[in-house]
Image (cartoon, rainbow, N blue to C red; front, side, top):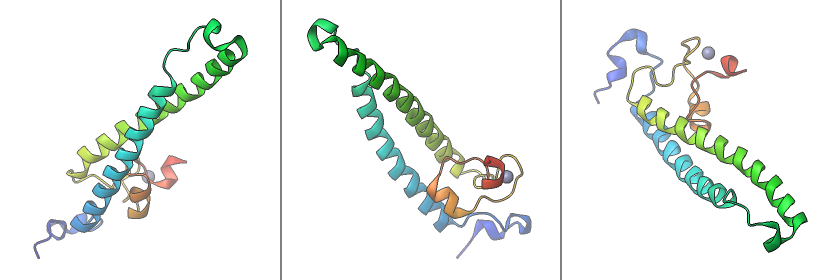
Length: 124
Ligand SMILES: [Zn+2]
């Protein structure tokens, strides 16, 4: 089987096509989960009805929950954007390489966090 990664000796850390396929599948799965969560958060961060409709205390609760959910929504959207970037990068030679130190990011980490741009050491 022709393997592009074998072409350049210095690219021996490159991910195999199988690994890339696995990562791609993991990205799509996570993207689906995130999309569902984002929809949920969007639902939860809709404008809150006036106090007359739900009572003052409930409304205060709703406002607190809303800001928590808004933070969660922003976080989920950020992760989602990271997944899109990861998908774009998947076709590039540098995918799977830490953007800080250039070392290969372990495949396990990529499967777990496909949006990761750095190795564990650099992420800390
Ligand atoms: Zn690194």
